[in-house]
Length: 114
Image (cartoon, rainbow, N blue to C red; front, top):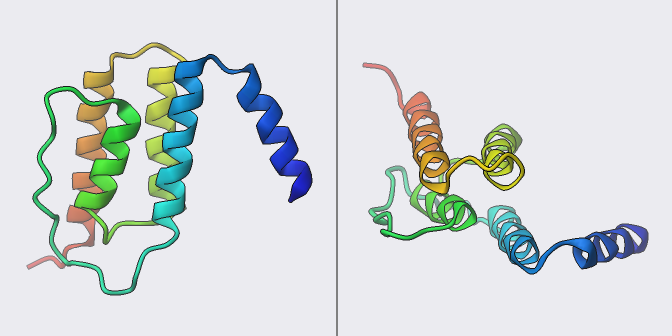
């Protein structure tokens, strides 16, 4: 693990300040995601979308809104959307709209059919 830490530190040093901040926010998101309790709500929490929000902040907000969701697939899909914003320059608001849809659809897929 020490080798991975050194590699990560070198990569972080090469990033511009804004990307360093985004990487830190994403690492915090991952840490929160893996430290969840088993007592999770069964309905989304009413956390409103702020007028100004970064993509990483939206992922964190949606993770708090839908704490019952988890799994590598959701994380992978959310990471892919974040990459579209950071690496490909897609507008944050459009990516956040897609994240909202992703989380809502994953939640709806977990609901029992009537």
